[in-house]
Length: 378
Ligand SMILES: Nc1nc2c(ncn2[C@@H]2O[C@H](COP(=O)(O)OP(=O)(O)OP(=O)(O)O)[C@@H](O)[C@H]2O)c(=O)[nH]1
View 1 (cartoon, rainbow, N blue to C red):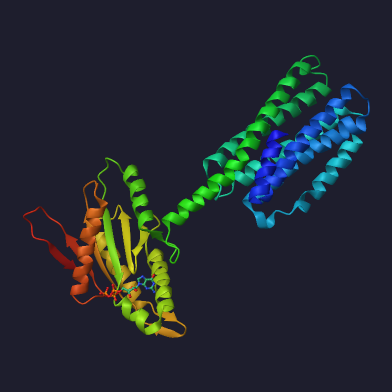
View 2: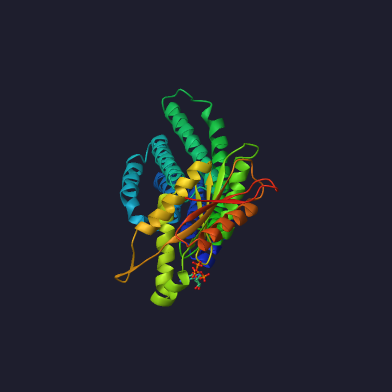
C-alpha cells in the first residue's frame, strides 16, 4: 500500500501515466491478497477464487500497461487488454469449483504477462540503462517462479506432490512478494535514469546539427582512450572550417547559414565511418576523430570530404549557395595522451589550408623538435 502511495505521489508530481498504472497495480495487489485470504473465513468461491484471481491478473496487466506507457506511449492503449481480460474472466468463471485449475490458469496468464514485460523492456533500444537491465532480470526471475508454481499446481492436481506443496507454496508466495516489491521500487528509477541520460545527451550534442559538441567530442575521446589503453593504435584528427562563412551569412542571411551548417554536418556524417567521431567545436568549425585511421587513409578521407562538399550543391530557398571547406589533419601512430595538442596541430594545418587559398586539405607533420614542420596538400 505504501509503495502504491509513493508511486501515486510520483504520478501526481510528474504526470507520467506509468506511475498511475503501477500505483493502481500495487493497491490492487494488496486488495487481491486480502480477498483471497477471506477463504479462511468464508466459503464463497466466486469472491475468494474467481474475483481474487482475476484481480491478480489485472494487477499484472496494469504493470505491463505502465511499462508500455514508458516504452511506447503513443501505442499504449489499454483496450488492447480487453480480449485477454474477457477470456480470463470466462476461464475463471468456468473453473469456479476447481480452485487448482483457477490457480493454474492465473499463474500461466501472469507468467505470459511477465515475459511480455521482459520482451518490452529488453527489446527497447532506448531502455538500456542499468535499472531497465535489473528490471528485466527481476521480471525474468518472476516469470520463472511463475512457471515453477504452475508446474507444482499441475503435479499437485495429479496427486504427484500431494503432501509437499503445502510447504512450498508459502515460500513461493514470499518470493512473489519480495520480487514484486523490488520490481515496484525499481520502476521509478527507469524514468529518473532516462531523464538523466537525456540531460547528458543534451550536454554532449550540438542542437543545431545533431552531431557531438566540444564536450561530447572530449567525452568520446575519453571512452576511446580507455578502450585502446596500452594498445598502439593509429589515430587521425581533422579540423574542418567552412570557407568565407561570414559571406554566406551576410549575403543569404543567418538562417541560410544555419541550414548550411546542418547540411554540412549531415554530409560529413554520411561520408564518415560509424566509429569516427564528428563534432561541431563551435561556430563553423568541426572536428573529426578517426580511430585506427593511418596516415595514407587520412589523406584519402580528407580529400574525399573536401571533394564531396565541393561537388554537392547546397540549395537554400531555391538558391544555390556555393560552399567549400578547408581541412587540417594529423595522424599519430603512438598511443595518445594529449588529444588537445593533436587538435592544435590539426588546426595549424587548417590555417595553412586557408592561407594557401582555401578549399584544400593540409596535413600537419610534427617531427622531433629539430625537425621543421612540413605541410602536404592533398
Ligand atoms: N549562421 C550561423 N553563423 C555562425 C554560427 N556560428 C558562427 N557563425 C558565423 O560564422 C562566421 C565566421 O566568420 P569568420 O571567422 O570570419 O570566418 P569565415 O568568414 O568563414 O572566413 P574563413 O574561415 O577565413 O574562410 C561569423 O560570421 C559567425 O557569425 C552559427 O551557429 N550560425
